[in-house]
Image 1 (tube, rainbow, N blue to C red):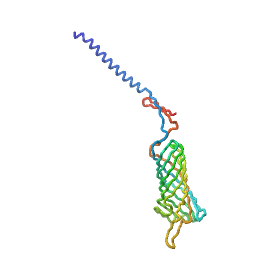
Image 2 (cartoon, rainbow, N blue to C red):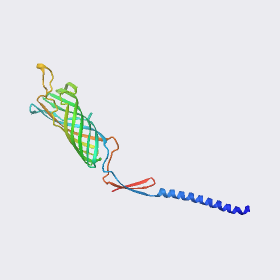
Image 3 (cartoon, rainbow, N blue to C red):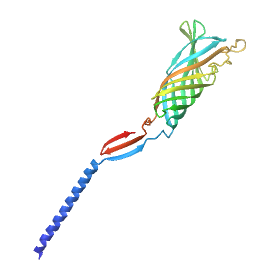
Image 4 (cartoon, one colour):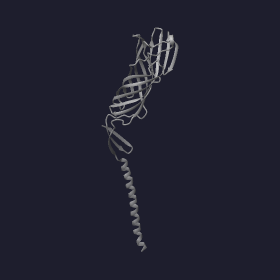
Length: 267
């Protein structure tokens, strides 16, 4: 009787082995099929950057002055400064083509004048400014125009005097009364992929006409009859504190993925 069971046991063992082998083959085939499959997805890029983001930059400033002494034009020399011209801006884009910004500007502004043929004066202030402006164009990182106004706090004044080309005197003062404490200005400019050109105008007199030195009979008002209005042309580059956000011109995309390979088509 027991010998009659052997063929049945062998047949059951054969069927079990075949089923297990078939399961392994199917699993391998499914894995290969999954690796070779292609997935397609469609999507749309955002129109703008939603959050406030930070940018910063360095600049070189070429300054000009419209100067008058007793109503007559005074000779002056264009002045270039690069050291300590740095800004940090906080940006908000309302659409892809319109945004606003404010921030903090640290600037070195001033002028070079020649009251006489032998005397040359270099006068400058360090300022801390707060701009408020708008951007129009491709504000997501392309080309855009910007304009606005700024208030500067003048916190350090420095002056150098030269006679016949030789420096004879220099001094600096913190929060000096020789210039206004608050200096308003207007600006406008163009930025192209980080590189910027800006023109800034200060309508207020650079000097404080009411400033006096000495006392009694020796009291003098060195700037009583002096007018100076500054204009700056600024060349700079804008950096970004986070990965630069750039909205593609083609808003939609189709992504095809197969294994580790991926292809993206914009339209």
